[in-house]
Length: 140
Image (cartoon, rainbow, N blue to C red; front, side, top):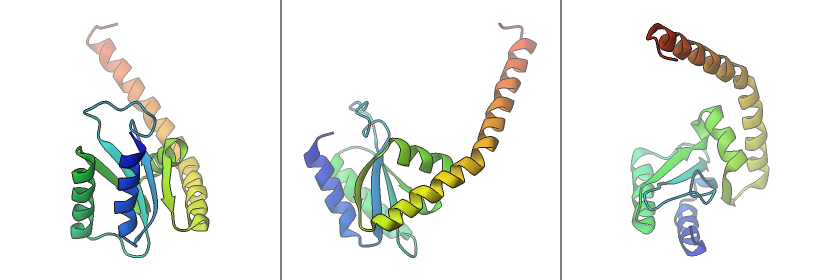
């Protein structure tokens, strides 16, 4: 994705003063996007969340500028796994408050570490169940 488009995205996001922090993540952020790839954005908003109208209006503006699908994750209520991925692999677009951003990253890391054992257990159970199903069906 070129810098001109990134700057347009940042400009649109900064128009909404509720948006304190913004990241881009996914295939576009790591340079593996194709023509059909969507753009994944993550935002942290101050105070009350964006209402439905604000959210849809923001999404429409971004899609008009980007000429492709845009997915927006609200970091305030995102699950720990997606927040961990965003902060680990995403690229920061801007932050109006570095201290708040650092606190959010640290809090998200602790949240992820607390949940990781459950994610791992769930994954192991899923693999075990799939293996049993394959054995029952006679496939190897």
